[in-house]
Image (cartoon, rainbow over all chains, first blue to last red; front, side):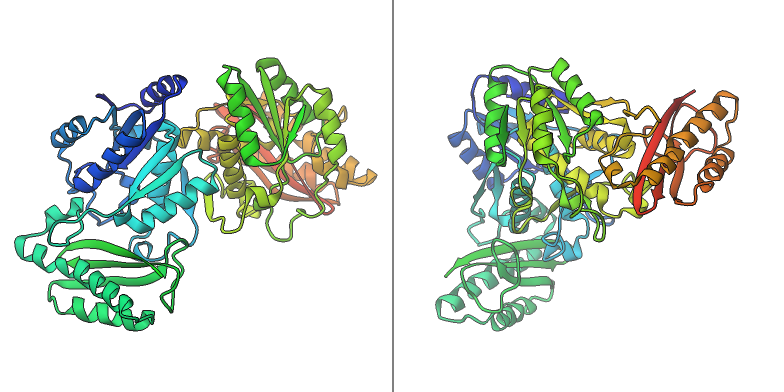
Length: 281
Length: 281
């Protein structure tokens, strides 16, 4: 496994690989790797000749006041996990390598970046789309692997890749959960024991919604209300949003129909957590 | 020479070429080709194994009320000129091929797109940057050829290519002029005989500025005043802007120093014309 920090060196390494006709699978991450990331890496390993994992805590996707500085960076643990998973290249640039002085270019996915998490995290998805566009030009992957946990991010990157004609395909892998139901997240380390238990209310409320839909409930307003009621039982929980939207274009739905995404963002204490479930009818 | 309309077909054709190790020179145009474009094509022909010319009147770079509909589209003449110049591929997509339903992704070069022409053409450079990003992913050129006539466009594309790590280099070729001094432009066809003569005031005022600088004048304000005075002598001419800026980052200059761009936009009757001169001290 090689660890590369410079964009030009990464590009060169990938070009050499591609010149031999080998396929490249790419898992973009901010590090603090957990089983969710590892499920993407394993799938990339299975599908491709070469696996590239980027580890870059992207300043452009953190708004002022967010957790850029304290975001976990367990570097040696991440390296060990990548090595064990059979990764070929870790691309781990510094912020200066990605945003050198004079940097001015940003990629926006209009509309999709202003709903759900975009409402409370202005600029976040512009930062995501921009860094992914850059990474695509540095890593030139055949396939990008993303997690369903970050559903909106996956929709936005998919849209961007298609709109800007990037020659890569996208594979979205299911959310990995603890036995308790808690979706894995690098931000779970911020939770104390009590908060971690309270955080189960996210997955529990999504389970409730799934059950209610199975039972025949189709009204998005009533579903939202039931979810909100369940969450409000936890004192430490503060709903940021509960959204029931079309899974492809994130347009709000009044009735559960087709491919539907139920997505939540909830603050547990000071930690903002997200979770979602895909429902197909 | 092959004429290709579908992005996927263009991409495939270029991939086949690149697989043989051949270099690709790319000249993006909106058609209505003149000697300015042909100078780019000839240079691309000289430097590369394969030359791709795109002909696409890009709706995204026209503001409402601008000349999108009446923009000249002399298709068979353009094709003949490309053939004669030894072009290998014309890429000539329809607007629907480039902006299919649901298109949402735009590339912006912050700051650079709000000065000079960006002031009176809001959204223009976002449209330019977006279509060029797409074309780069479809044509994968080694070198892009641009004209100095569209100086701001060249600065913005250069910035975007660097910022988003597109693996292409940029070559900017000098403005081609009529003997009279008038910079060639596809929009010159809008001018009647009288206006065409009045339009000489653009190049004449730039020549005056160059002479004054050679004579020792360094004060940008005074230079601007002299340019404005000369232009105001033509009744049909209305100044949009006169800018004296750093040639690399388009920052306004008070004193002529280093690599300096003097750029104008002037309406002659209903036709908006631009011209510029690069001065190095």
